[in-house]
Image 1: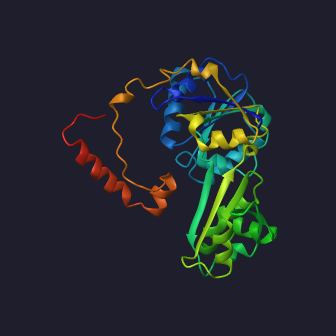
Image 2 (image 1 turned 45 degrees about the horizontal axis):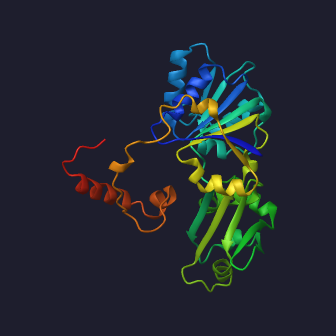
Image 3 (image 1 turned 90 degrees about the vertical axis):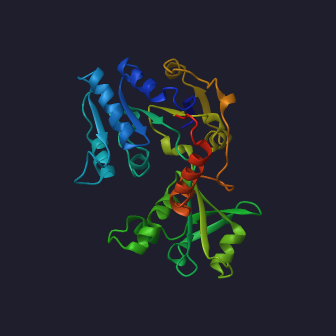
Length: 308
């Protein structure tokens, strides 16, 4: 994907409504694959389009609609045998990124509501069992500090990725194996940390791998547009620009926004509740207890002040 259209606007500026209005105005003359972050947002989008245009053919693919089989499998099947007329398909970021194959990509415009995350990290304490995956990897140094992991035993990595027997230990490595096997990710490690782990010299036994998404993951679609708050400031925008991707503003979608700047930023006070780098991964996996602590601290700061 050498060119990507984008809309960079603040939260609340109406990016999702801009997509809906563009769909209803017939901007997408063929088929549209819309990828959104949550099930609730998908349902809201679906209901709004059906309310305003009952004849529009829209299909949702998420776990609350498809309950008797794999959502990813159902979506792969749809792309192989799609609805014959113009239509809209909506699914989650999670489902989209789990698709191992998408047929007929060229027939779909792709719109991502919210930017995907550039880095998918793996960080587990595995002093004794890291070999279950590291034995099947080779390491290529990329300078003095970092290296790239490459598949060495594709058969074993594929077995881990598929985990056909539902083994709980293999499940820990399944996603990582898929990412390392994928041409759409590059897996980086710190050379010293990784080599010390392999040699049994690392005290904490952490296997830390940074899987970086490549723009090739969106190759083959008719077009691609990404909508996100402050998109130019994201790691994805900067990294992919360095890789040669040309980002250009989607003026058509921008014309539907309520506004492009918050005008009351001078009223904002920032309080930092966590000194290290913060992410969804840190919040949900490494420090899940912090959420309630941050809420309590915030309520203490706000007290009786009005807030939204």
